[in-house]
Image (cartoon, rainbow, N blue to C red; front, side):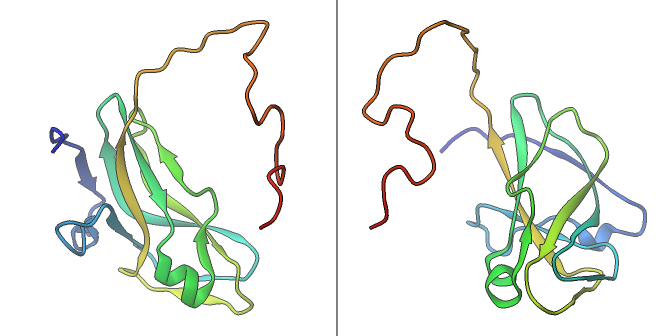
Length: 148
């Protein structure tokens, strides 16, 4: 098992009941809840605030992802999935949600709207060059492997 990392969480006043939590001890993600009531109109992005502020250690990020039940049952998703929260960000965590369904969807305060995974970032260095090695795929892009 990997070493534990501490992420500091500060909650907006009167939002202690919205603390991120795992539904089961072995879940990968923490549920994020809405701190407001709002209606999500179809086909439009909506910024849903959570009341969460975080201090993520350097070398880590938080990834905000859709909840599968909301996606399947109500066509709700996180528009920039996964949304990245960088270690230097100290503002309120908000979720960019998209209602891809045909009907408006009402979010109530306390509803679980997304999930958050804390991920380690490997050290990376970029090396700029004039030539890249060949590969079997080459420059083949979207759809280049065909439909099966």
